[in-house]
Length: 245
Ligand SMILES: Nc1ncnc2c1ncn2[C@@H]1O[C@H](COP(=O)(O)OP(=O)(O)OP(=O)(O)O)[C@@H](O)[C@H]1O
Image 1 (cartoon, rainbow, N blue to C red):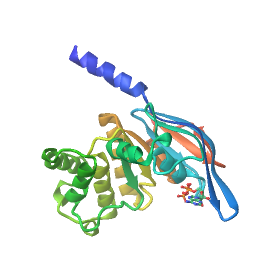
Image 2: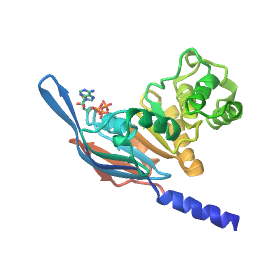
Image 3: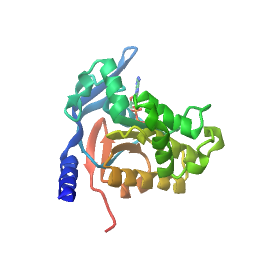
Image 4: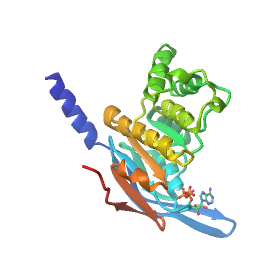
């Protein structure tokens, strides 16, 4: 009975739309030139999906990711996180929503250089307002998940690129976000380390039901994701995903 309920809940969670873009446009005005980076993007991302945005440099991927995360606002159109229109929220509410519900991962890891791996992860719990008594267990759990328990006292410069990105993943998941936004998370890594990061993403989606949206240039990654969108001329086009049976 309990298992049935749990299964039903999982199906329900899968049906939910986590992120919805409605005709998003974004213009950048520099001097007397206006650049249309996004020209009407419509997109819907369901819970528990791993989604990739690809496209050539300058095609608008980061711009879209920033609007998805409430870090930037569209010139027109709407971005919804679950039922809430994040693009219409005042700055302070957007920040609170972001801290509680989102995890961010960047190409260059963006760890605090003077903090150890475990202190970097702990910082995200502190920022999300998680009670202090939960910190140490949750930090240990997240570092274990990314396979870095043995490196917890190391600072970023004492870790490899792949290890730093895994600390960044532990930091992004520590407060149990609904959605992770990752901007070129494997771009600085070699093929093997990039693959490890993608395996972790897959595991997060499968076992934790986290939704992940990432930008990438890497064609190899396309085999691990559920959906691929190509950014072409400021618009998104969905591509067929080839998956091995
Ligand atoms: N703050 C800004 N002011 C002016 N123009 C900007 C700004 N941010 C981005 N742009 C322009 O918008 C376009 C889209 O940039 P964006 O960073 O979203 O591309 P991208 O697809 O992420 O590229 P890359 O793969 O190189 O990271 C580019 O032409 C860029 O120069």
